Image: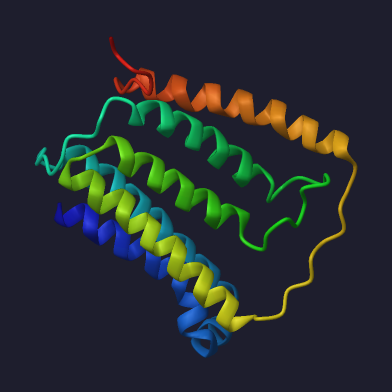
Length: 183
């Protein structure tokens, strides 16, 4: 569990560094990007290893129906994440689509995982994303909404979302974690 928590802290530190210590970040120049990347990658690796190796300590038993809600929320999360990169009508619908997607992802996984390691991982990522939004908004309160593009780009995003969701479920199944109800 310690490795998981340290991974979350490195992940958060790598992302918060620019916002919390802007003068130091600016003084370091390009090296700051390298340091942030190193912290984030190390944090991600430690989260994966820490989560996979954590003892299973059950805290609560999620109801079976939450699996369906999880899958719906995950589909929404993948779509919302994609709106950060679209040039369609949905471009700029919100300032932080990737962080909103992380929040949806975290909530979806908290619904179906009642063990302590999952609560630490997904709860930690939910907390990180919320704090990240606040730090960004405080550091740069002004935001100019980008121009909307053609609707056909949004249709392409729907197709990409379905393919990405299929790939994500396939990876889960390959890792031995079925995202679908077992019955």
